[in-house]
Length: 154
Image (cartoon, rainbow, N blue to C red; front, side, top):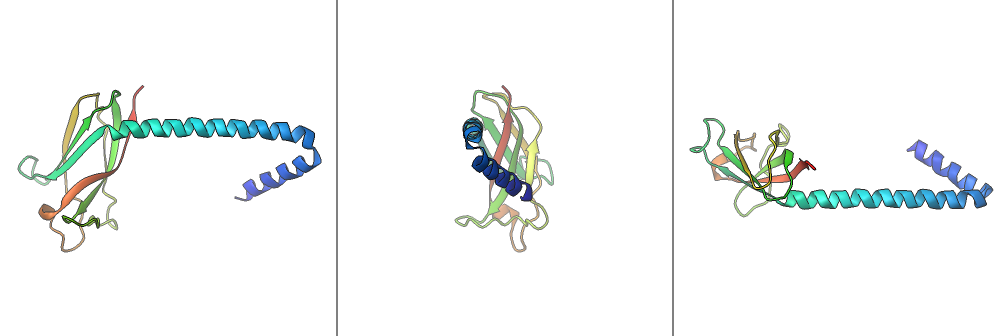
């Protein structure tokens, strides 16, 4: 913070002292900063569109999964690029409510898969139920994947 303030003050002093030199330089720096911001914004938008093509579902299905891992997660890649390192956060809510019942004090319920998911393919895995707040029963809750994120291969 102090370094930023010092640089700003130096820039102001130089701008006031040498306006003919500093105005064109300042304009060039501002144009480069805007160009960089536009490129980063475009990349963020493009990655967001690709993540929107990852369709997910999670359900409490103890019969379909190994003992002790009753949550079945299904991810389908409907984009045109291979998804890698898919990450998500699990939330558990009562039907018709939106309060997350995962005990965040113990775990943040963040999961990931290292497996690459090619376009048009599905991936599924089974996970343990994260620690829940007292009084919550895992079988009675609705689960969903939030904060879905992934890297995409070129």
